[in-house]
Length: 358
Image (cartoon, rainbow, N blue to C red; front, side):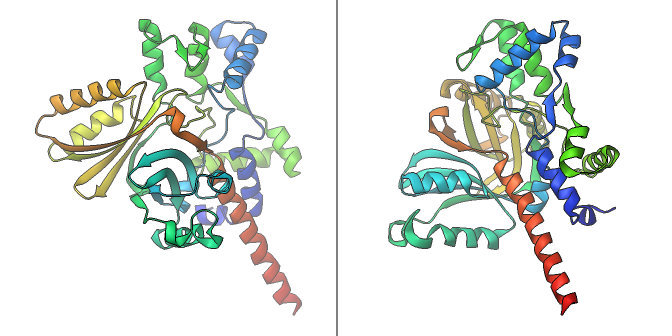
């Protein structure tokens, strides 16, 4: 069955909704206990603490289909009112992935968004002005936005920054994530579950919820994975691209020579969870990186410019500290997209049945 036909089945979409919400998806405590040679209760307590301290989130199936349905990635600097209406709008909007307090010139908000195309993004911008709740037209400044195609993503690896923590812990340089004290056991647990290991799916529970046979659930999940609609289940950091208490830096980079070689180093760099081939003015690459301090980022950037002299021509950075983060809901867009598709299918079926009755 083709991807298009598969995604036009309501039963498939309802299963997808559960998987991407983390329903019936759990960390396999017994498997971790066996592999790490620890008592099951010890592992369970440690996992509970990691979740309670917001070091990780509960596992879900990531929706890769999102990039197909919403191939336009927008990073937008806006001037919006700082009030509860704006907060509610950003936290619940089905296209906003994350929002940050941000001050640059007239702009006070930065958002990461996904859209179907440029037209749908423009329609979305018009809705921001509706009723004047988010911003009135006379108070608004034209957004300063960056547009990227998700088809040009060279790297999307939310687990990559963990390797920085693991290396730092082994060297004795990193002892905490946020206010959580690290030890060898917590490092080993994080290493496994952030890479999608020791995570199980309860097909029986999903089958009961959807009132279908367990084997049907197994076949559907296998098909969704095979066609690249979902990725294998994994836990993620709550800020998605960065560990808690780490900065997120967006960099536009102009690489004039040895582009593939430099991009190859960036793809392998654990400090880079996201790399996109870009076409923004003079810049041809977009890099999202993570660091504890601005000074650490400057040293890292200098190392690249020195190692690739005459290759990197220009860099433009935007720094987003943890204190600037006010909304990251990595599942919201995926879940709202699936709900939208279910609703459209139900509407089509209702219209079809109505036409038959006539």
